[in-house]
Each structure stands twice: as C-alpha cells, then as structure tokens.
Length: 170
Image (cartoon, rainbow, N blue to C red; front, side):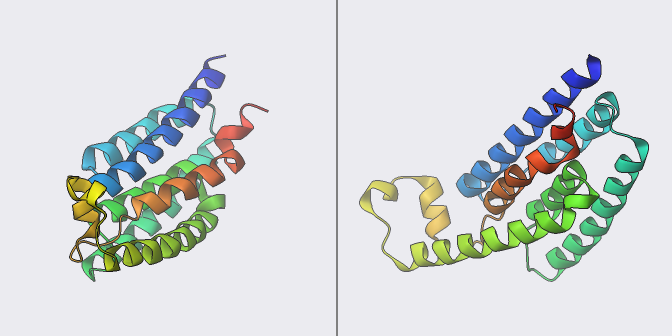
C-alpha cells in the first residue's frame, strides 16, 4: 500500500515539476537550483519508498552522473545554460537508465523545433499584445539562449508512462 502511494506521488510530482520547470524556463529563462535539488531529494526518498529496486536506483544514478558530467562540459563551452545542465541529469535519474538515451533524443528533437520557433519569433516584430509582458520581451531579445527546459518537459512527459514509475500501477 505504501509503495503504491509513493509511486503515485512520485509519478505526479515528477510530471508536475517538469511541467512547471518548462513553463518557468520560458517565462524567466532560468531553472532554479531549488527545483532541481528538490527533484533529486524527492527521488532519493520516493524511489525506495515506491519499491524501486537497488539495481534500478544504482544504474539510474550512474547514468545520471555521466549525463551530469557531459552537461557541465556543455555548459563550460557555453552550449547550454546552467539550469539545463542540472535539469537534464535529474530527469534522467527519474526516468531511469533504460530511457536515458530516448529522453536525450526526444529532448534534442523537441529542442531543435523549439529553437527554430524561437528564432523565427525573434525575427518578427513583437506583437503589441506581448510588448508589455516582461517574459515575452525577454524571450524575444536576441541575447538570451533558448529555454530548453521547455523541450525537456514534454520529452519527460512522453516517456514517463514507459518508466518504472508507471509499471507500479499496472
């Protein structure tokens, strides 16, 4: 009973937090350390409580650590933002080692489409209805990067039903 409740809680917490992170990244162009830290902490608590076996937790942690090393290298080269560099490995941790490559590929494809849309948005004049909105001016400016949290969120949501979290409900 407790493991089922923990699995449901984890499932909705991860889905909700990733959705929030994606929206927040578009609005503020940031992904907070608190959000990423809360997701990592919640995984450490909820995975064992939901009955996720030690082998799955270990392999997920190992792959997430490798992804973290890669994303920090990408951050050092200026290819991605710091929030993206932290959110991606935490999402891999939650989804599991088996879905890590799928997640990175989904996020990359969605991110490429998002990049094209944002670049087109930045080429066009900002509509009057959006000119008074801070978030739209920030997104329209040419200096900031692309809010890849908005690509990671749908990628995670697409794969979540295939993860070990969803198997607890079947």
